[in-house]
Amino acid sequence: MDVSAIASTASEMTQAKTADAVQIALLKKAMDIEAQSALQLIQAASQASNPPHLGNRLDTSA
Image (cartoon, rainbow, N blue to C red; front, side):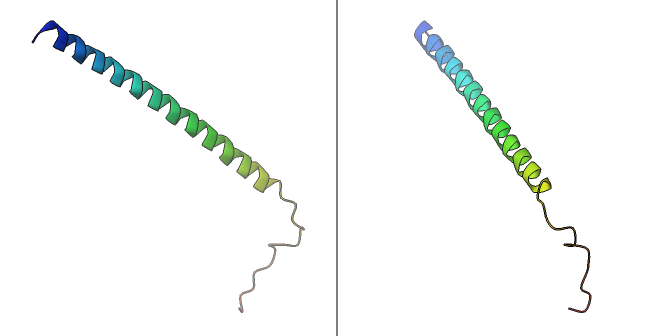
């Protein structure tokens, strides 16, 4: 192998590592956003103000 081929291979490997790092960072950011959205949804559902009589009876004849 000549020197330029080695340098080219090293450069390609560095670019691949950088691309992998960017993709992982983007995935982590997307997962954080999804976690925040899920938490907001759970909080909104727990704050629902339904009347107290809802959900107390079960119709077994239907």
